[in-house]
Length: 266
Ligand SMILES: O=C1O[C@H](COP(=O)(O)O)[C@@H](O)[C@H](O)[C@H]1O
Image (cartoon, rainbow, N blue to C red):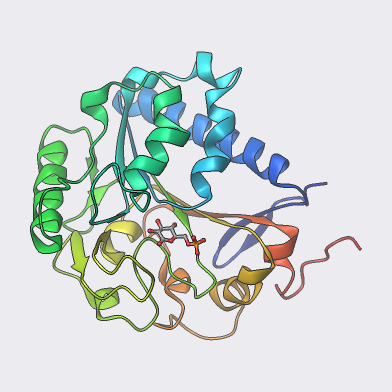
């Protein structure tokens, strides 16, 4: 059973008993945002992350979404990527391609992966340049309040340590403000070399969804959502608050089990 939606200062909470219910709700959510963006702007600019999130998008490859979605209008980017070859098991591109992109008719030139032949610093620069071109072409909208791209939707997953994209707890990359895309060569989670959207870009999006499942992430969810502290570099998930947009958390009962004041059935 899914709980009724809960509105908190840290975003809307959608809490599901099963991963199947969560996947269905996520598919409906993405589909509604895609339809609204295509109606308003003629395109849908989506940024993906890696992890089990990709598996949860599987329902979009099934009826009715496989037929009702205007796939030709989709443009797909990555909120973070590991600097490895596209065929490497650690590649977020490969994960998304195998688990999602190869199953739906998105136009290949609308899939904007990093250049995997470059170093981390070059890949971040190149990716930022590519995003700038897509902003100029109006494929990606632009923020009214800051010099940032405004993605229609950024899909994130949060790790047990509270990291989102490749923004890790207490890492210097959390403070990056001048770049849209930053690089790391010392990620605490392997592989060490990564590129990531910076917090200003994440917080400029029209919509951000954070998907979190499993017992091992319950404490990180509590620290990111409950009234425990102000913005806190030890909880990157807590630093996500779209200034002009909406934040939705997709949780299962296990991940939600340490949240204050959420009555979960026995
Ligand atoms: O390294 C990464 O991890 C997260 C997900 O964390 P996990 O501990 O749940 O696997 C992922 O969303 C991110 O894109 C990725 O690069």
